[in-house]
Length: 198
Image 1 (cartoon, rainbow, N blue to C red):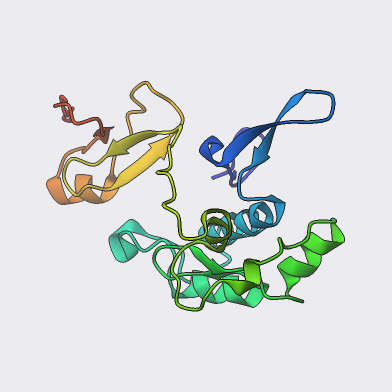
Image 2: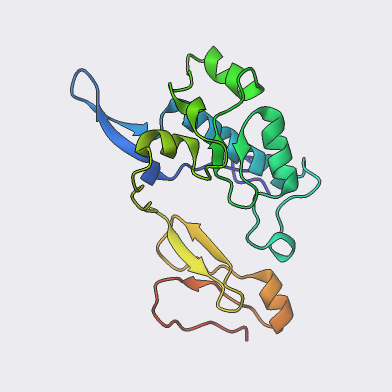
């Protein structure tokens, strides 16, 4: 459903993937930690999710059907068609975009080129190519999310959103099964009052 501006979907980049970099004048800028080429691939990846969800795809993500598989066969097929290589289910880009693919051409037209050495990543390595290039076998530090995690107390469906106050989200599938509203609760290890419909 469109928002108040008529926008059907929005793409948000997790701020944990940015780092502060000073330019020549000393001004601090936020820069994608894995490089501009990886950022372009990530943007295309998120657009493919949007493409599926607004009805362009034939198999859009549905919790009751796909569960944790947000990167289903249709998603991976469309991604490969456009040049990126996400791993099914996990979505990790295991190799850099195919040279001469639509995304590679678009990024190069914008002056964004693949980093040297990214094409040397061994086949079968399941890490993100950009992480492999940065960490080269060293342990990658754990990621941090700036979003708040909320879960369904009945089935464990988890979502992350940018607000801290209770969003009063209802999980329709579990509500239908239970016969009363099932609200998502904050995933913080604390016990919570689960509101019930009157």
